[in-house]
Length: 180
Image 1: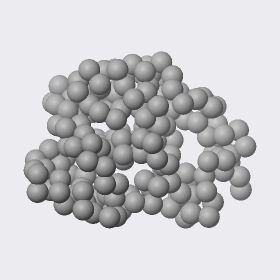
Image 2: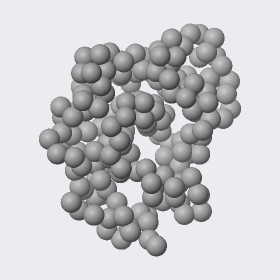
Image 3: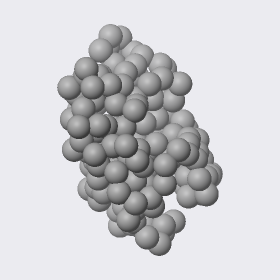
């Protein structure tokens, strides 16, 4: 069974993620929040690195409970900075907390983050391969940055949209490939 060339088949977490999660439309705001935080930590790193630390991130970030994350204080930031099992980048940790607050504000404004995302896209999913950005990721990234989010450039948002199933990008050789 062939998979996308980026999938390290020697890593069971990666195989499971590729086969069961990546590209599958998910409308649950808790999942959308988790993936946005993880994707923002990926900036400059590999997704495999983040995926290998995902359980540690879940534990460190109180199972991505947005109500807890938005209230993280200096003590919690210090705890995260000293957690060797996650990415200990101070700017990304600080951004994750401020991004959580903005995420929460977007939920209030649109009833859900999913509904916010839907304003940008008329059809789901978009089927395309071999891109790192597109007009959709450019627009969402620009809007999130204008709202004050960090580490949400167009490439990060494109990866995010692939992860949550708004963009479907399995390689033509992959057993999961489809184009409609």
